[in-house]
Length: 340
Image (tube, rainbow, N blue to C red; front, side):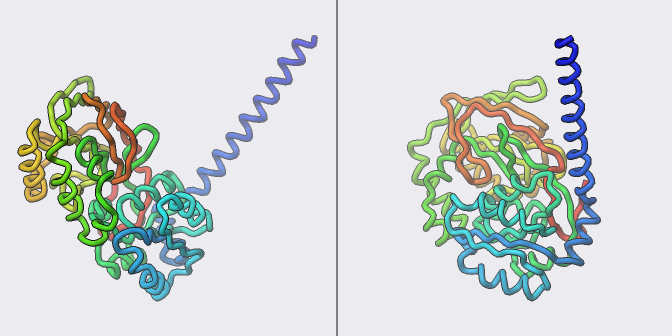
């Protein structure tokens, strides 16, 4: 009898736990508004929180201006946070997102935007972009203007869309994963140089590293096939821009695809030549052309193991699995933006 009673007790507890989980899930689903409903709430209530990375190139100089122009645009700021220490960014973003607004306005570069995107994935809060960084690749991808007044106009007159995020391990990213040379550059580029000369800081740093950089033997496994090559640099992009330039004419962050591609071959001269070609000819290239591989998931191995950067921030070393989280992020975009 004791055994029967114990089984009955366990079954009862299990039913209660399942009911609680189901109720919480139903409550969560019920509170996630449609994109149209969230767009309307943002326009009508204008309840937002602001976080600006004042460690970024333009953030420190423009923080007060940003606050004043959001006020002038009619936004009721529930909180406004300048962040000048990168180690505090995640905590401040979480605090701002928890204030109950419909919109989290974030000013900074791709690293700042990436941190905000990871926080807001699958949440009932939209991301508002103010491109204040060096290259602003994700803002370019989703069509947010680089001009401050025009970017604020998107927050008042635009609409909520949803876009894909990439996944490297368990970490979401907005724009790209860089393996090899770019990760070494990100680690070595002096912050003062980035603030002084903007995106020119990266090629200047690259010139100092190139003479001693070793080529990588790379294997990319995707869709049952293995692709092998030797290169100094591999990118896996979710967005449509890299280093402020289009990757191809048809790459974007809402197509359920990642784009993997090497930059040049085994020689340093090839790396320089292909980097220049990518910078000048990206808008004329398509995903169907060499050397692009457009897939949903892939596994990357290198020999020797190589550093990884994710949206301009250090991540770790290869090997690594990279995938997609479709339609994971809601954000304010221009009213004429396509949306799948």
